[in-house]
Length: 116
Image (cartoon, rainbow, N blue to C red):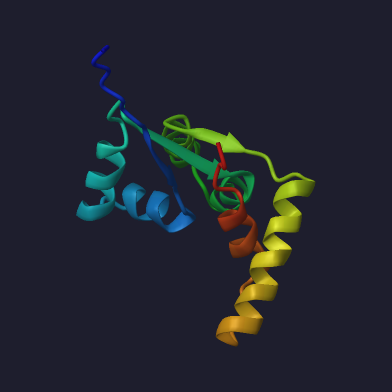
């Protein structure tokens, strides 16, 4: 019998606020992002997060650079038709089961989480 150690990477979908809090130097966010650099953790971002982060009109070149560095820690996933349909399902489910309207950007971000 072969003794195999099976290890699975943890996967995290990082939201816009985590990046913003990290850039502001908030301790918990900084520690979380630093822990993501562990080789057993994969991080993902939606292109929606990328758009949200870069949409502030007064970003300096240095701030844009720092955002880029944080995004480089993970994989940016494009919103495609499959993700759009999953987001629509999540919004419908949110309304039906929780009587809450999930905002489209939040639904798109949540639907981005990799299914691999």
